[in-house]
Length: 271
View 1 (cartoon, rainbow, N blue to C red):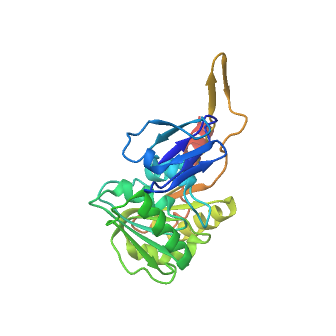
View 2: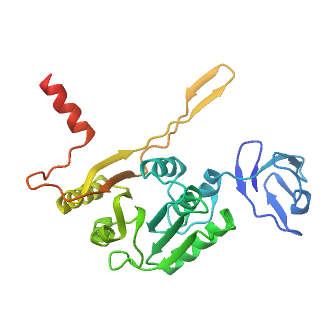
View 3: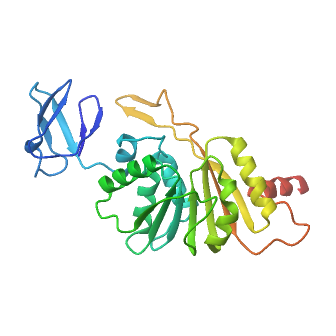
């Protein structure tokens, strides 16, 4: 459950019989909440009211235990849309991390789809497995593998490949063999130098087209009483999302992959 106090501080709690929730605002027995409907308010032993709700995926990914920085909700939504993750898709993920992206992908592909998640570190895989099990108790459509996809990918015919790796370009030759024709490769990277290295390689390989990069910024607003203003803090840069489509090899001489921005600029110059 997600517990929210009067100052909107949030706590993620796994309810168990006989256990107790405690905070500086007081606490209560888990048994008082078990069986109650979502949205109920409980009073702590110090007289404070606590709101209890089922956590959304965004709540869970922000508050879940982690061994690595997670992909934040603002980027998860963009990844699902930019990567066109659809129900029934077969998705290869590499860089399981703490499992936030795995959870989003598994929910998006649904029961008819599947997610195969690779990582080179066993501790990362164990943390991701634990978090996915908490968020998605029935995780039959998720498989975890301890492996380096830059060396080998055991399966093929993936509709989408989603990477959260520091050097995704090293896996591109393997991905070319594992991705279906017309499939989408999506990479999430924190720095523009990594993006540049990746895009150069994708262009040089000549079988990737529509190479595009976006960044998502989010500015919350405070609305209350007579005050309507942007928050003093915003969720600015977290990472870049680069996508590319696997296609037939480009003709000789067509070495540059134009972005939509390039075409717009050329049209303006001609006008």
